[in-house]
Image 1 (cartoon, rainbow over the protein chains, first blue to last red):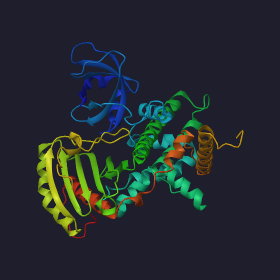
Image 2: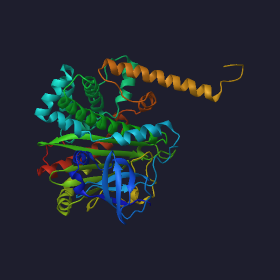
Image 3: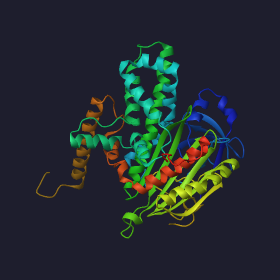
Image 4: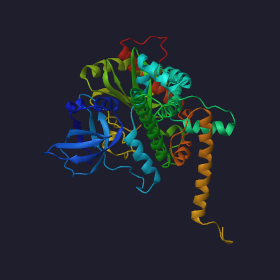
Length: 374
Length: 87
């Protein structure tokens, strides 16, 4: 494996604009970095998303090289691994490659625009600049962001439907059925506000201070839309290989906090002997929670057989999760599942290669903890 | 087509592109009526329209994932599960 850990030094966060960007990073996110220089052994100066950032690494690379990185942890410092290859399985001449590269540079967290709009003072200012049409979209966006973490199957399905992942397919269905309006989802609402922000930002129409507010909003909206679209594009690349690779960022409320639940769902490409109930599903859940810290779960499902391995960065969180496994086992068995593996371990969740293709089934990431394929 | 022979590969590809472009244009028009612009290449719009829907996932997967989410919720909220808990 040509994967190497990078660690950004937080003192760099003192630079203007860097802290907000660091706050938008999420685990599993993929980025491109250009190597500006290697000032000393073990150090790199990288340019990522327009920011110059020092990094510590054992990697030796040439100046000017482009690295493809995936965020693997946020605490205590953002950690990234260098991905083996960019757009594996996709020809560089593929026109989608250019789209993908542009989106990588723009992507941000879906939480960024929501946090702006949930801040009362900023919302009042923003809505006054965007006009009356923005109020309805903003209100609907706030409703989506006020959902709790989905704890029943219906709420989870609704969260997926609201995520924006299915916007284009629901537009196509609406056209086909003549039903008219597709449902409002996260992507359509972000795009509605983005259009209004661009219209309001026409040169000469706003004061410089207001222009800065609109610029901040526009960048947050563009970043969030790019993040959703990247998830959608990855899914389509997987679909071409007859598999499913769906990635969602689901905002949810927990008390006063607005948080993100990252979900990646993968179904192996099906052979003739692996249809229906024999299909093997693998899911990664990940969240940064106020009390438990960085937690994740690696989940297998085949037929009624399930395995779940929780990962937590903090030892105390592992202990807490361990204490809840009995109740979870009972709930799963009550739901007619056969539990094969159920445990909690300390450490980072091995995350799928979130580029175009999934890791080979025999790769260490695919089999690190749940070592029996069910 | 310039002769009796079958359409060339390029001609087929061009027709396919045109159909995709037309579909994307109709989707973009619907989006505009809804008050937003898709803000992406027509080829991307066409591709993403194949995403399927949430109901493509099996019910058992939804049940399993919601149980795991419920477990994390109760741990984070420091509230034990109860019989009437939605999770």
